Length: 356
Image 1: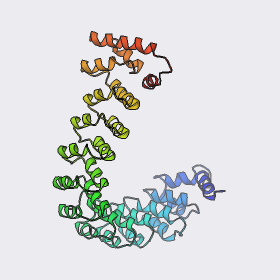
Image 2: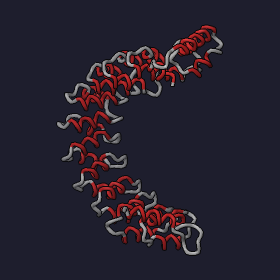
Image 3: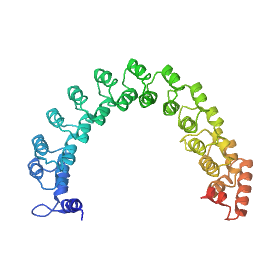
């Protein structure tokens, strides 16, 4: 039997003396008096103590006591709840920085109140995960980023390279790193210099080129060249919101299915690309394109409505609406499509899929 589940169930339903609200409700309620919260902070259940730790009305002395009194078993629960508070005292952040638990140290790094002095201290710990969190933080100083740019871990160096606040000279330095993971981080940086992206677009490592293909700052001419690269890289080009329609259309007949799916699943696909996909040999791609077209059945462009109305695979309710369109050609096309759809046997799986 899982005793933790039992504790959780009982602590959430256990009522305070005199009836009324449960201990959990009282511990979570911002209107609970400070004295009662201080008493609940000594509750035997870590669930109740976590609720007290998260309560904005809990007095600071109770928060300090919660952290100091925690045993090794549930330190990860209650202390984390305290460290996630936006008003946690700096002294408590400093006190908890001595813990070796990665989750606690990461919570300290992620707290906006954590001063540079604590980040600097934690940037020397042996835990790659903690140094990586510091390397990716938007509050890390240039001094710390510069030192971590020569970290022994290529993962940490890559996170420094991917951090938008990393100075340009450090980003350019890391672009020449021997480790592909580090260079990939640089290529992922949303503020990466254009000339650096252009250079990394011909990197021998496919992961690096893939990150360039997915970066919105990558120039159109580079995206056009990467559209002829390996399948996974072409898919990144197709996913990139900065990729122009002309490049997307060039990928419409790609040999790799995931490239086509990446195009179809774009949230704001241009109508010209949708039109190119409606007759694709991949049934699912064609279905998704037609469904996306169907959503534009109310377009102000009659040419778009005519295309939607002309395909019997479009959902029946859309065709029925278009059969009453103000443009005669659209009305006729929708009417004919409805007639055709009615004659399609249920065993025609492609038609059935499109009409769902």
